[in-house]
Length: 325
Image 1: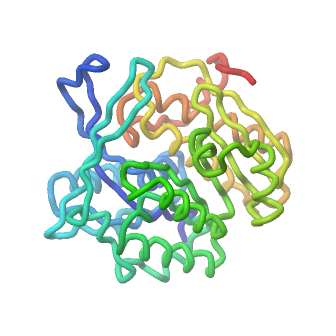
Image 2: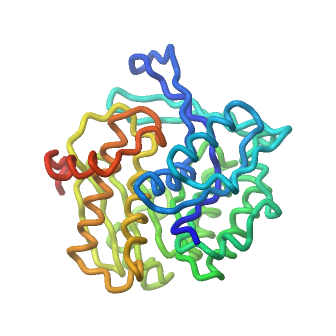
């Protein structure tokens, strides 16, 4: 049994290493939000697997190597002949905030993940099953993702959902919003950014969202990440705030994925995941996750930037908090 299994896209992020606004040189870093989450989870010490499809090309080989190096199982990563590995070029601001230009269409491998590629039995043997919305943008990956999630849920897994909104990959903002919200009832653990909250829920107050998702949809944990301000979490409708750490950010790619992986990792260290989770323990989990997310911003790339336990503890003990609310 895996503690966490993730399904979705894995790709290569080309991250600029020159001055902001003048990306003369790029560094190729394996990424993709679900793969980042599964890799960070494994690097922190959990047992994880990733389900996805890359091209049978050098970029696909780099992706596989990154999973293995992080300690994540690659047994369900398919190297597909005739399809290319998806590429994303990252643009960084002077503060390390990023935007993406994707090279992804019907000829790229991740879009062509099909329901027949899904290892049904393994979906049902994971404690937490994680997915995002990028693999919901096109067929057949949309059907494959939803099939995997439903099989995992039927097998008793807690379903983790991080939409990781990339509007450029959707036919329209309205379709993105509709598809993302349609999948929400499948989730037990839900993570979004401030920007994603505004996109999905408009002017609804965050407190109202956290309580409504628990009371109406039965989602016991919703977390809203806020970059340097840290995060706000709603555990069974009750609000918790945790600040980020004051580090010098050079690349925020993968920070949210690492943060969420850390939350999931610490929850799976508990025998009953969410049951009996007290306030002090949950606050400690959020602080730990903020340390992971903050540290990832200090290096380029997503999977390559995952910190080890010694770095995390040092950050929590010696680095001041940023953006206290």
